[in-house]
Length: 492
Image (cartoon, rainbow, N blue to C red; front, side, top):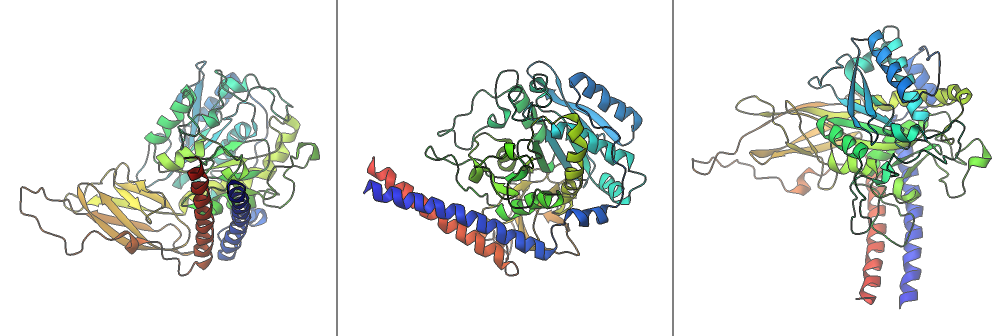
């Protein structure tokens, strides 16, 4: 019995992997047909000409600190610098904000973040976040597209999440021999609270990890990317899967179609990341187990427990992907300008994706005041976001028709239909909730009861591709689940 079940299990797992790639490709074709993604050439035309930074260089902690503070002094009205926390050895986790409203959150202005250098020896993102800041600031008055982006977004740039590790890394180290971990020898991208602690217990959470968690909870980030190095692709949640028998397993999140679009938008805006084939220009850096496509579900590549992008998705309002920017972990200075040319349009466009969100205000119907911590759900499975500040919310979405349900323990829920279209890619909605009257007083029962969950599922009647691939992957995962249950019963 056991050998037969194992044969079925490996057959089902192989089928899931095949379906995963088919699902990605079907979604990519769908989004391309809709005009939701742009090529590098199209982005060049849309964004228009801009001046690149004059210099690209590696900077240690002291030099980086001086550099971003000098940049702030040069552009005091468009920048703000703060520390999100400290490393094990007391180095600040600097954040440079670029925005028309840099100092504090402004009502209905969405918050975006890039985090780089999580692994201390993966340094391209560290350099390019400084380059990105220069690009945004020095072209603010000459490039309309950049000016509108800066005016409509608060952009938080953290060049280094692991400044201690960086101090031990070496230029020219292609494979990343030293400096990956923090000063306590911990891999920070395995250090966030695990989704499945019974399978993968989380080790002692590090100061850098705690700082990132506190930071992300304090600011209503809606979109984020974590910049790494070592290959050339974008991976997206989930990174984790509850198994001790495999190193990889397709693990799509309930928002898989959205994540495919986010990831492919970056890859397609890159000069070659979107192309099928070996990921690296230098054949010596290509690894046979690396994916052949420019995007991949994280766990389908290899399982990571305690990763930052999964934690963001499950615990905050933020959708995050992980960008592997280039194959060399610590490239030589002379290669940086070429790598910037490959990534610069994708870096800019990815920020702009934050403006593809259903957004608005949740308000008390009687007082007109914003309601904090109201939930905004798009269906019964996908990520639920909560309102912030003055009742603001942002919920990234693909194009389509959605029934959004707004709820709070002190109020009657309300469901409203929203259309996300090419003409209205980021629809605004204002929702007024009626407070529930305490039971000690007369109660007026609403004429419409709380909606059944089935009443506010996403209407994908115009998005058949999205519905088909979701059904296929669900059937695949159910088959695997049933086989695993059968295997478990043999040992009980």
